[in-house]
Image (cartoon, rainbow, N blue to C red; front, side, top):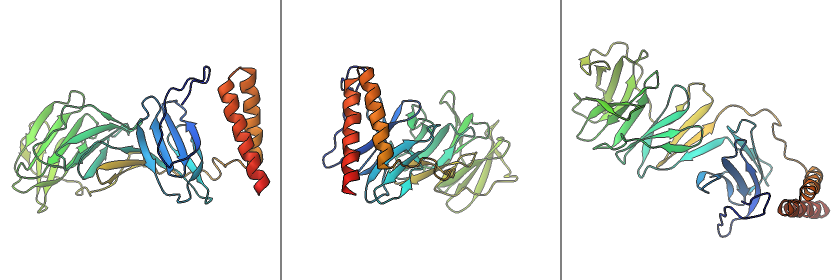
Length: 304
C-alpha cells in the first residue's frame, strides 16, 4: 500500500508463490480485500493483519469488489464463478469452540471455547473486544446474551459445573450459579431476561433468578440451544464455528448482477481515464499503475 500523493510505501505484505490480481478498499477505508491465485483475503488496512482468508474458487480470484455499505464483498474467479459472503474470521481461541451467540443489536458476538475462555468480538469491524471475564477454570461449553444485551451467561463444563453471569459494561462477574453435578453443556436466558437456564450433559435442566441468583422452577424454558452456528437478530448474518475460529458471513441475497465484472474493453477505458486524471494531478505512481493495467488488458484482448 502506498501514499497516493507521494508514492511512499506504507505497508507491504508478501507471500511466496502468491500473486495478487485485484485489490479494493472497503467504503470506510479500514479494510482491504485482495484477490489472487490463493483466493480472497480481507486485511486490516492500518496493521496488515488478515481478518478473513477465503477459499473456494479453485482457479483463483481475478476481481474483487465491496458492497456499498461494506458489509459484504464479491470475488470473481477465473473459472467464471462469483462468490463472497464471508465478512470476517475471528481468530484468537487456541482450542476448539462450538458455542457462539450474537448480541441483540447485532454489534457483538460472544464465543466460548475449550481453551477455558469466553471472548467478545466486534461484529462490525471483526476485532476482539478486550474483556476481563475471559478466563474460566474449565472449558466454556456455552454462551448467551441477555435479551437486553447487558449481560452474558457462560456455561462451564468439567468438574466446575456452573453457569456464570457477567455484566457486559463492567466485565464484572455478577453470579456463580451452582447446582449441576454433571458438566454444563448449554445455557440460555428466558425471553424476559429474568431467568437463566442451564442444561447438563444428561439433559437435566436447572434455572436461577437473575435478580437474586437463587434456584427457581424452570418455568417456560426455551428449547435447548443447539451447538454450532448462530444467526443475528435480523437474520442476515451467520456466525459459524470452524475449529478454533468463527467465520462471520452475510447471508442476505445478492441482487442479480449487483457488481458485474467489467469486460476487458471496459477495464481499458476505466484505467485509461484514471491514468489521465492521475497525470493531471501529478500522481505519478497512480498513473503508472493504471497504465500497467491498460497494457495488461490490451494484451489479454489481443490473445482472445
